[in-house]
Image (cartoon, rainbow, N blue to C red; front, side):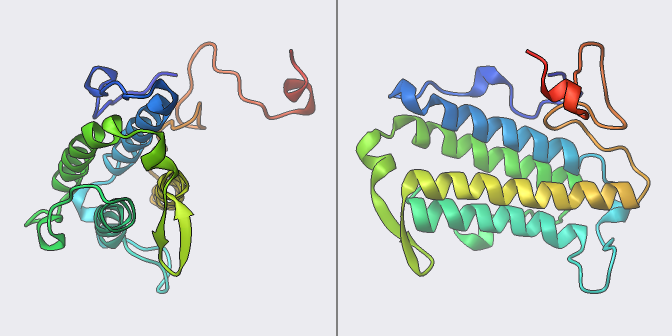
Length: 189
C-alpha cells in the first residue's frame, strides 16, 4: 500500500524478543501511522467541529486517544507511562497532538519488544473483568480504529479528503489497487 505520510518508519520498529509477537509491534506502528495521517487532514480551525450536538468534537477525540491509550497500556498492561497530567501537549493543535502520539508510541515499542509469551498471556484486570494482556492490546488497537473511523466521517462531512488506511478510498487510489466491491471481485483467485 502507498501512504502519502509515514509518522513512524518501519526502520524505527524494534525486533520482538519472540518473533511470534513481531506482528503486534508492526500493527501498532501501522495503526498509529494511519491515525496520524487522518489527524493531519484536519486543520486547527476544525478542532471544535462536531457533526451533532451529542457528538464529541475533534479536539476531545484527539485528547481521548492520547489519554485512553496511556490508560489502557499503563493501567491494564503495565507499560511505563508518563503521569496523566504530562500526556497532553500544553497547547493542543493537530501538530502537537500528532507529535505527542508518536512520542508515546515510540516509548512503548521497546518495552513491548522485550516481552515474552508468559507476559503477553498473563491475565490482568481490565475494567471489571480479567483478560490476557494480548487481548487487551488488541482491544486497544480496535478502540483506536473506531475513533479513527469516527474522524474519517467528520472529514467527509467537512468536505475534506479521506486518507487511505487499508487501501484505496474515493479520494485516494493508485494503479494496482484492487477494491473488492463486487461478487466477481470477491471470487477472484
